[in-house]
Amino acid sequence: MEKNSFMVFSGTCTKYLAEKICQSLGCPLGQLQITKFSDGEFAVSYEESIRGRDVFLVQSTFPNSDNLMELLLMIDAAKRASARTINAVMPYFGWARQDRKDKPRVSIGAKLIADLLSVAGVNRVITMDLHADQIQGFFDVPVDHLYASGVILPYLQSLKLEDMVIASPDVGGSKRANTYAKYLGCPLVLCNKTRARANVVSSMQIIGDVAGKNVVIVDDMVDTAGTITMAADIMKAAGAKSVRACASHCVMSGPASERVQDSALEEIVFTDSIPYSQRCAKVKQLSVADMFAETIRRVLDNLSISDQYLI
Image 1 (cartoon, rainbow, N blue to C red):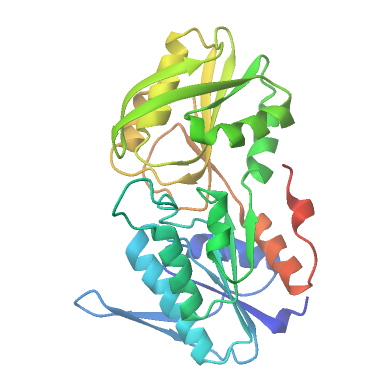
Image 2: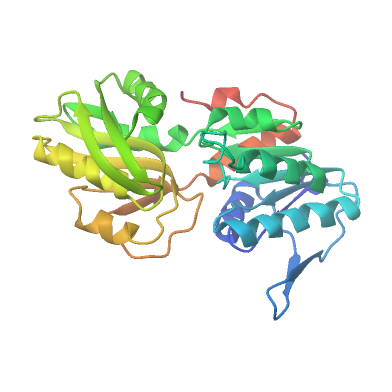
Protein backbone atom coordinates (compact mmCIF):
# COMPACT_ATOMS: atom_id res chain seq x y z
CA MET A 1 0.00 0.00 0.00
CA GLU A 2 1.62 3.25 -1.17
CA LYS A 3 0.62 6.21 0.97
CA ASN A 4 0.51 8.60 -1.98
CA SER A 5 -1.69 6.30 -4.09
CA PHE A 6 -4.86 6.87 -2.07
CA MET A 7 -6.64 9.64 -0.21
CA VAL A 8 -9.35 9.65 2.46
CA PHE A 9 -12.02 12.34 2.67
CA SER A 10 -14.97 12.81 4.97
CA GLY A 11 -18.41 14.31 4.86
CA THR A 12 -19.65 16.57 7.65
CA CYS A 13 -21.25 14.11 10.06
CA THR A 14 -18.62 11.35 9.96
CA LYS A 15 -15.44 13.40 10.27
CA TYR A 16 -14.83 12.09 13.82
CA LEU A 17 -14.61 8.51 12.45
CA ALA A 18 -12.65 9.44 9.32
CA GLU A 19 -9.98 11.06 11.52
CA LYS A 20 -9.64 7.81 13.51
CA ILE A 21 -9.43 5.79 10.27
CA CYS A 22 -6.70 8.09 8.95
CA GLN A 23 -4.81 7.80 12.23
CA SER A 24 -4.91 4.01 11.88
CA LEU A 25 -3.79 4.22 8.25
CA GLY A 26 -1.05 6.74 9.05
CA CYS A 27 -2.27 9.26 6.47
CA PRO A 28 -3.74 12.77 6.68
CA LEU A 29 -7.43 13.43 6.17
CA GLY A 30 -7.94 15.04 2.76
CA GLN A 31 -9.01 18.65 2.39
CA LEU A 32 -12.63 19.01 1.32
CA GLN A 33 -14.75 22.15 1.37
CA ILE A 34 -18.54 22.11 1.63
CA THR A 35 -20.10 25.48 0.90
CA LYS A 36 -23.60 25.99 2.25
CA PHE A 37 -26.10 28.47 0.86
CA SER A 38 -28.81 30.22 2.85
CA ASP A 39 -31.61 28.14 1.29
CA GLY A 40 -30.02 24.87 2.48
CA GLU A 41 -28.32 23.96 -0.81
CA PHE A 42 -24.62 23.13 -0.64
CA ALA A 43 -21.68 22.53 -2.98
CA VAL A 44 -18.65 20.25 -2.63
CA SER A 45 -15.09 20.93 -3.81
CA TYR A 46 -11.79 19.12 -3.24
CA GLU A 47 -9.06 21.48 -2.08
CA GLU A 48 -6.20 19.31 -3.42
CA SER A 49 -5.57 17.24 -6.54
CA ILE A 50 -7.06 13.75 -6.58
CA ARG A 51 -6.23 12.95 -10.22
CA GLY A 52 -5.29 9.28 -10.59
CA ARG A 53 -5.80 8.54 -6.88
CA ASP A 54 -7.89 5.87 -5.17
CA VAL A 55 -10.33 7.99 -3.19
CA PHE A 56 -12.16 6.77 -0.07
CA LEU A 57 -15.14 8.87 0.99
CA VAL A 58 -16.22 8.25 4.59
CA GLN A 59 -19.86 9.16 5.22
CA SER A 60 -22.69 7.52 7.14
CA THR A 61 -26.11 8.56 5.88
CA PHE A 62 -27.58 9.62 9.22
CA PRO A 63 -29.32 12.00 9.54
CA ASN A 64 -30.38 10.73 6.18
CA SER A 65 -31.15 13.24 3.46
CA ASP A 66 -28.44 15.91 3.77
CA ASN A 67 -25.66 13.42 4.38
CA LEU A 68 -26.74 11.24 1.48
CA MET A 69 -26.80 14.26 -0.84
CA GLU A 70 -23.42 15.32 0.49
CA LEU A 71 -21.99 11.88 -0.33
CA LEU A 72 -23.50 11.93 -3.84
CA LEU A 73 -21.93 15.33 -4.53
CA MET A 74 -18.58 14.10 -3.16
CA ILE A 75 -18.72 11.13 -5.55
CA ASP A 76 -19.67 13.33 -8.51
CA ALA A 77 -16.92 15.85 -7.77
CA ALA A 78 -14.34 13.04 -7.46
CA LYS A 79 -15.44 11.58 -10.79
CA ARG A 80 -15.13 14.96 -12.49
CA ALA A 81 -11.72 15.49 -10.87
CA SER A 82 -10.40 12.28 -12.51
CA ALA A 83 -10.01 10.09 -9.43
CA ARG A 84 -8.85 6.59 -10.41
CA THR A 85 -11.38 4.79 -8.19
CA ILE A 86 -14.13 6.16 -5.93
CA ASN A 87 -14.91 4.10 -2.85
CA ALA A 88 -17.85 5.02 -0.62
CA VAL A 89 -17.15 4.03 3.00
CA MET A 90 -20.60 4.01 4.60
CA PRO A 91 -20.39 2.65 8.17
CA TYR A 92 -24.15 3.16 8.43
CA PHE A 93 -26.24 2.70 5.27
CA GLY A 94 -29.46 4.64 5.77
CA TRP A 95 -32.81 3.78 4.12
CA ALA A 96 -31.95 0.07 4.51
CA ARG A 97 -35.25 -0.74 6.25
CA GLN A 98 -36.98 -0.20 2.89
CA ASP A 99 -35.59 -3.35 1.26
CA ARG A 100 -38.72 -4.97 -0.25
CA LYS A 101 -42.38 -4.43 -1.12
CA ASP A 102 -44.08 -5.62 2.05
CA LYS A 103 -47.38 -4.03 1.03
CA PRO A 104 -48.79 -2.48 -2.16
CA ARG A 105 -47.68 0.91 -3.51
CA VAL A 106 -44.54 1.41 -1.41
CA SER A 107 -41.02 2.44 -2.40
CA ILE A 108 -37.93 0.27 -2.09
CA GLY A 109 -35.64 2.97 -0.74
CA ALA A 110 -32.52 0.79 -0.40
CA LYS A 111 -32.56 -0.03 -4.13
CA LEU A 112 -33.08 3.63 -5.02
CA ILE A 113 -30.05 4.64 -2.90
CA ALA A 114 -27.95 1.92 -4.55
CA ASP A 115 -28.95 3.27 -7.97
CA LEU A 116 -28.16 6.86 -6.97
CA LEU A 117 -24.69 5.90 -5.75
CA SER A 118 -23.98 3.94 -8.93
CA VAL A 119 -25.19 6.73 -11.23
CA ALA A 120 -23.09 9.26 -9.27
CA GLY A 121 -20.03 7.18 -10.15
CA VAL A 122 -19.06 5.01 -7.18
CA ASN A 123 -16.76 2.03 -7.90
CA ARG A 124 -17.05 0.23 -4.57
CA VAL A 125 -19.09 0.41 -1.37
CA ILE A 126 -17.70 -0.54 2.04
CA THR A 127 -20.41 -0.76 4.68
CA MET A 128 -21.29 -2.55 7.92
CA ASP A 129 -24.24 -4.59 9.17
CA LEU A 130 -26.86 -3.79 6.55
CA HIS A 131 -30.41 -4.12 7.85
CA ALA A 132 -30.91 -6.88 5.26
CA ASP A 133 -28.09 -8.82 3.60
CA GLN A 134 -29.85 -8.88 0.22
CA ILE A 135 -29.23 -5.15 -0.19
CA GLN A 136 -25.76 -6.11 -1.44
CA GLY A 137 -27.48 -7.50 -4.52
CA PHE A 138 -29.01 -4.10 -5.31
CA PHE A 139 -25.56 -2.87 -6.40
CA ASP A 140 -23.75 -3.54 -9.68
CA VAL A 141 -20.41 -2.66 -8.06
CA PRO A 142 -18.46 -4.62 -5.40
CA VAL A 143 -19.83 -4.33 -1.85
CA ASP A 144 -17.58 -5.15 1.11
CA HIS A 145 -19.98 -5.94 3.93
CA LEU A 146 -18.34 -5.83 7.37
CA TYR A 147 -19.78 -7.03 10.68
CA ALA A 148 -19.76 -5.21 14.02
CA SER A 149 -19.38 -8.59 15.71
CA GLY A 150 -15.64 -8.08 15.21
CA VAL A 151 -15.63 -5.50 18.02
CA ILE A 152 -18.81 -6.43 19.95
CA LEU A 153 -18.02 -10.11 20.57
CA PRO A 154 -14.60 -9.47 22.19
CA TYR A 155 -16.31 -6.92 24.47
CA LEU A 156 -19.00 -9.43 25.50
CA GLN A 157 -16.33 -12.04 26.19
CA SER A 158 -14.43 -9.54 28.35
CA LEU A 159 -17.48 -9.22 30.64
CA LYS A 160 -17.11 -12.90 31.61
CA LEU A 161 -20.82 -13.23 32.38
CA GLU A 162 -21.99 -16.53 33.84
CA ASP A 163 -25.29 -18.07 32.66
CA MET A 164 -25.31 -15.83 29.59
CA VAL A 165 -28.26 -15.97 27.20
CA ILE A 166 -28.39 -14.24 23.82
CA ALA A 167 -31.77 -12.77 22.86
CA SER A 168 -33.23 -11.40 19.66
CA PRO A 169 -35.76 -8.56 20.06
CA ASP A 170 -37.77 -9.89 17.11
CA VAL A 171 -38.00 -12.93 14.85
CA GLY A 172 -36.32 -11.03 12.00
CA GLY A 173 -33.09 -10.74 13.97
CA SER A 174 -32.99 -14.40 14.99
CA LYS A 175 -30.29 -15.33 12.46
CA ARG A 176 -27.89 -12.69 13.84
CA ALA A 177 -28.65 -13.63 17.46
CA ASN A 178 -28.26 -17.34 16.72
CA THR A 179 -24.82 -16.69 15.23
CA TYR A 180 -23.76 -14.83 18.39
CA ALA A 181 -25.15 -17.61 20.58
CA LYS A 182 -23.28 -20.32 18.67
CA TYR A 183 -20.00 -18.37 18.84
CA LEU A 184 -20.35 -17.76 22.58
CA GLY A 185 -21.72 -21.25 23.26
CA CYS A 186 -24.85 -20.11 25.08
CA PRO A 187 -28.66 -20.52 24.70
CA LEU A 188 -30.87 -18.39 22.45
CA VAL A 189 -34.10 -16.63 23.41
CA LEU A 190 -36.53 -14.99 20.99
CA CYS A 191 -39.06 -12.19 21.37
CA ASN A 192 -42.22 -12.26 19.30
CA LYS A 193 -43.55 -8.74 18.77
CA THR A 194 -46.45 -7.18 16.94
CA ARG A 195 -46.41 -3.59 15.74
CA ALA A 196 -49.33 -1.18 15.79
CA ARG A 197 -47.43 0.98 13.24
CA ALA A 198 -43.83 1.97 12.45
CA ASN A 199 -41.77 2.55 15.63
CA VAL A 200 -44.70 1.47 17.85
CA VAL A 201 -44.79 -2.03 19.41
CA SER A 202 -48.21 -3.14 20.65
CA SER A 203 -47.31 -6.46 22.32
CA MET A 204 -44.36 -8.80 22.95
CA GLN A 205 -43.90 -12.37 24.23
CA ILE A 206 -40.67 -14.15 25.25
CA ILE A 207 -39.92 -17.56 23.71
CA GLY A 208 -37.41 -19.26 26.02
CA ASP A 209 -36.20 -19.20 29.62
CA VAL A 210 -34.47 -16.14 31.08
CA ALA A 211 -34.95 -16.75 34.82
CA GLY A 212 -31.64 -16.35 36.66
CA LYS A 213 -29.79 -15.60 33.41
CA ASN A 214 -27.61 -12.70 32.26
CA VAL A 215 -29.37 -11.70 29.04
CA VAL A 216 -27.70 -9.91 26.11
CA ILE A 217 -30.12 -8.60 23.46
CA VAL A 218 -28.54 -8.41 19.99
CA ASP A 219 -29.83 -6.17 17.18
CA ASP A 220 -28.51 -4.30 14.13
CA MET A 221 -29.80 -0.84 15.10
CA VAL A 222 -31.72 0.94 17.83
CA ASP A 223 -33.96 3.77 16.60
CA THR A 224 -36.57 4.91 19.14
CA ALA A 225 -35.53 2.10 21.56
CA GLY A 226 -39.18 1.09 22.08
CA THR A 227 -38.63 -2.57 21.16
CA ILE A 228 -35.37 -3.12 23.00
CA THR A 229 -36.46 -1.42 26.24
CA MET A 230 -39.79 -3.29 26.25
CA ALA A 231 -37.90 -6.56 25.77
CA ALA A 232 -35.51 -5.68 28.61
CA ASP A 233 -38.33 -4.80 30.99
CA ILE A 234 -40.27 -7.99 30.19
CA MET A 235 -37.15 -10.15 30.64
CA LYS A 236 -36.29 -8.51 33.94
CA ALA A 237 -39.86 -9.09 35.13
CA ALA A 238 -39.51 -12.74 34.04
CA GLY A 239 -36.60 -13.20 36.45
CA ALA A 240 -33.52 -12.30 34.41
CA LYS A 241 -30.49 -11.57 36.60
CA SER A 242 -29.36 -8.74 34.29
CA VAL A 243 -30.23 -7.45 30.83
CA ARG A 244 -27.80 -5.78 28.43
CA ALA A 245 -28.11 -4.91 24.77
CA CYS A 246 -25.71 -4.49 21.89
CA ALA A 247 -26.40 -3.14 18.42
CA SER A 248 -24.30 -2.02 15.49
CA HIS A 249 -25.86 1.36 14.79
CA CYS A 250 -26.72 4.02 17.38
CA VAL A 251 -29.62 5.76 15.63
CA MET A 252 -31.22 6.65 19.00
CA SER A 253 -33.79 9.15 17.74
CA GLY A 254 -36.63 10.90 19.55
CA PRO A 255 -37.21 9.61 23.10
CA ALA A 256 -34.66 6.78 22.80
CA SER A 257 -32.12 8.09 25.33
CA GLU A 258 -34.76 8.66 28.00
CA ARG A 259 -36.29 5.23 27.37
CA VAL A 260 -32.91 3.51 27.74
CA GLN A 261 -32.10 5.47 30.91
CA ASP A 262 -35.44 4.57 32.49
CA SER A 263 -35.43 0.91 31.40
CA ALA A 264 -34.17 -2.29 33.02
CA LEU A 265 -31.11 -2.28 30.75
CA GLU A 266 -27.80 -2.19 32.61
CA GLU A 267 -26.00 -0.92 29.51
CA ILE A 268 -26.37 -0.73 25.77
CA VAL A 269 -23.32 -1.10 23.54
CA PHE A 270 -23.00 0.38 20.05
CA THR A 271 -20.26 0.98 17.53
CA ASP A 272 -19.34 4.54 16.54
CA SER A 273 -20.77 4.18 13.01
CA ILE A 274 -23.13 7.03 13.95
CA PRO A 275 -22.16 9.89 16.29
CA TYR A 276 -23.99 10.00 19.61
CA SER A 277 -24.05 13.35 21.38
CA GLN A 278 -26.93 12.93 23.86
CA ARG A 279 -26.01 12.07 27.41
CA CYS A 280 -27.10 8.65 28.61
CA ALA A 281 -24.95 6.92 31.21
CA LYS A 282 -26.00 3.48 29.95
CA VAL A 283 -24.70 4.00 26.38
CA LYS A 284 -21.21 2.73 25.49
CA GLN A 285 -19.62 3.02 22.03
CA LEU A 286 -16.86 0.82 20.60
CA SER A 287 -14.82 2.12 17.68
CA VAL A 288 -14.81 0.39 14.29
CA ALA A 289 -12.14 2.72 12.86
CA ASP A 290 -9.38 0.08 12.90
CA MET A 291 -11.67 -2.44 11.19
CA PHE A 292 -12.48 -0.02 8.36
CA ALA A 293 -8.84 1.06 8.08
CA GLU A 294 -7.72 -2.56 7.72
CA THR A 295 -10.38 -3.12 5.04
CA ILE A 296 -9.11 -0.08 3.12
CA ARG A 297 -5.56 -1.49 3.32
CA ARG A 298 -6.72 -4.83 1.97
CA VAL A 299 -8.73 -3.26 -0.85
CA LEU A 300 -5.67 -1.27 -1.92
CA ASP A 301 -3.41 -4.35 -1.74
CA ASN A 302 -5.99 -6.65 -3.41
CA LEU A 303 -6.10 -8.92 -0.36
CA SER A 304 -9.02 -10.92 1.05
CA ILE A 305 -11.07 -9.27 3.80
CA SER A 306 -12.95 -12.41 4.85
CA ASP A 307 -10.47 -13.42 7.56
CA GLN A 308 -11.38 -10.20 9.42
CA TYR A 309 -14.74 -11.75 10.25
CA LEU A 310 -15.11 -13.47 13.62
CA ILE A 311 -18.50 -14.79 12.50
